[in-house]
Amino acid sequence: MNRSLEKIDPVSVPHRTLYTGAKIPAVGLGTFGSDRFSTSEIAEAVLGAAAIGYRHFDCAAVYGNEKEIGASFQKLISSGITREELWITSKLWNDKHAEEDVIPACKQTLQDLQVDYLDLYLIHWPFPNHHAQGVDVNSRDPHAVSYIHENYMKTWRQMERLMERGLVRHIGNSNMTIPKLKLLLRDAKIKPAANEMELHPHFQQPELFHFCLENQIVPIGYSPIGSPRRPERDRTPDDTVDIEDPVIVKIANRLNVHPAVVCIKWAAQRGQIPIPFSIRPEQYLSNLKAVITQPLTEEEMREIATIDKNNRLIKGQVFLWEGAKDWQDLWDIDGQIASA
Ligand SMILES: NC(=O)c1ccc[n+]([C@@H]2O[C@H](COP(=O)([O-])OP(=O)(O)OC[C@H]3O[C@@H](n4cnc5c(N)ncnc54)[C@H](OP(=O)(O)O)[C@@H]3O)[C@@H](O)[C@H]2O)c1
View 1 (spheres, rainbow, N blue to C red):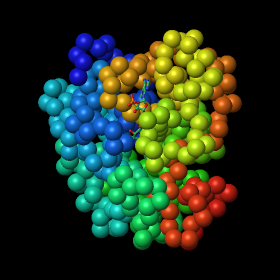
View 2: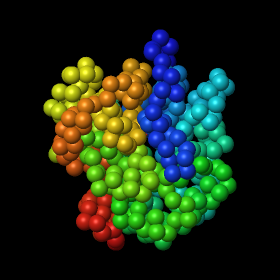
View 3: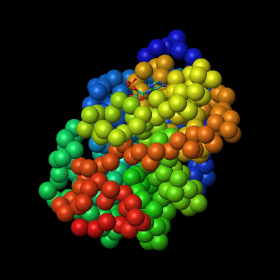
């Protein structure tokens, strides 16, 4: 941890308000190391980021580092940061959707993260289709199925029970689509508070983004910089690069910042919560500063709105089921939920 870095007062970081009235910091630190960094490097980044003012951390059981991050949270809490000041999100992995698995999976995460409750617990993907860490995109779970709403609701009921038991304060989803969210909103006893989704200038998902806002679901944007260092398996030849886009580069030059910082400013100003990943202190500091320093102009916001390329980076091929056409089936492109 670089202790000589500038520190940001967490109180000066803007917040967004969930429908419960709870406040979530407008930027968080991602903790998925994409096979590139060790669990201890990421745990160190959590400590370093908290030291310079981050209070919001995006975790997940499948990232395989919750124990190490939990040790960091423990250190933060013993150093005087209260649990209430932290915003901790985690996610239920796909192999734990069965009714009897949800509560134990959450308890395991709580134990690993060394906290009594989560601020937000998300169902990581709407499919119970597992894949081992780091597998090739052509790898398939032989038991993979398409979205089955009845089953998803069984998982959701257990998520609701977690809230009722006080183990989590909010529940939500990730990698959902409008048709799936409509069914969930129709049938849920407790509404989702947030939806974590891929969002960056070249993948703005305007319909889903607005649907979330209209339904008081806070959009949390993953891969906000366009995941420039994602693994080879998540790349296809047609993918575009947000931080090389001439509009983003032009604005970065005006502000004398890295193009990544422009992506974060755009995200926060548009109304989603970016959760950029970095273990490098200078980078995570500039990502936090992005939301408290000079905003983009209205003209720049309008220009960025025009560079959307509908370029989904995390296509999710590994979650496909037998008989699925291609990865587009995961995303209900024509407004219909694809079934097996
Ligand atoms: N819910 C889901 O299904 C889901 C899916 C994917 C991701 N996520 C979450 O979203 C988080 C972020 O996504 P991501 O890691 O895919 O992509 P990202 O945040 O868009 O990109 C991260 C990369 O950008 C570079 N970077 C970060 N800050 C920078 C700065 N200020 N200047 C220059 N370069 C910078 C870093 O590269 P170097 O390391 O090379 O410096 C870093 O590895 C994950 O960690 C995870 O928590 C969730």
